[in-house]
Image (cartoon, rainbow, N blue to C red):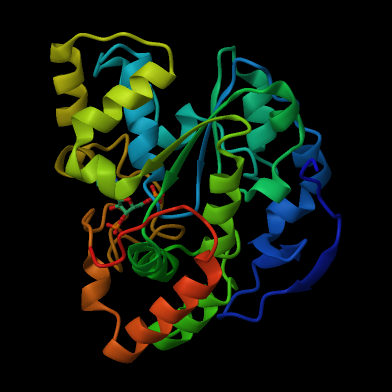
Length: 304
Ligand code: A3P
């Protein structure tokens, strides 16, 4: 059937020092998001919207910059017009009294590129009804966990992650913002043949950026020259984006993102999990992965 939402507000997360996550239909979300839930659910998508969808820390900023560079035909200056987090309204974003993500999206001229971290069952239903385009980026779970752990250490809007061992438990049980990685990736993967979804992998973009960028370009219905593609590859490299004040979040105050704890553009590599997982944790994780992802045709290389 059609994905639907349940309006069930439950208890607030016990994880960490702050209580800024609240549960909706089994998924922990930022409390301000839940406070704005009916506006989010009633959001009106349009057929010419492009929605960038990711589980947190899977390369959202990267694909946003790629999409924008394609939209702007490789014009670097045009991509400098605004901070990356302001170029594509974040549907579930809420921090009153500032305009919400929904309000920003409404104010945006079409064709719009929007973004979300919501799992399929919590997406505003009009997205499915509008038959717009979706661009999903998945990243292998272990690196995503590591990246998310460091992000929660430095992001004051999210709960303190606790120790790495605490976080490992929370992550595998889906007790982190936007819920379980497994359910998120599986949910979107299962939708991919029913809707216009381009499903990409962080690791593929890393390995062969030009090839993946070309796929995005075709999906967006654009046709850019080789030379322009080469510029986009260069400009969206980790090194460039780490130095770029429009993409590295350096203008966000330290009271919100403390980049002295961990930079927003942290490592941008594949396989950093090997520096974090113990042998035992890796075995536990592989078991859980097998169980949770059984029956899906999705093929992640977890050995990366
Ligand atoms: P790490 O913490 O592993 O470095 P998101 O944008 O969804 O929050 O994802 C952030 C992750 O993507 C971080 O991972 C960040 O470094 C990485 N990232 C951002 N830009 C990138 C780029 N151009 N190339 C590779 N990785 C990038």
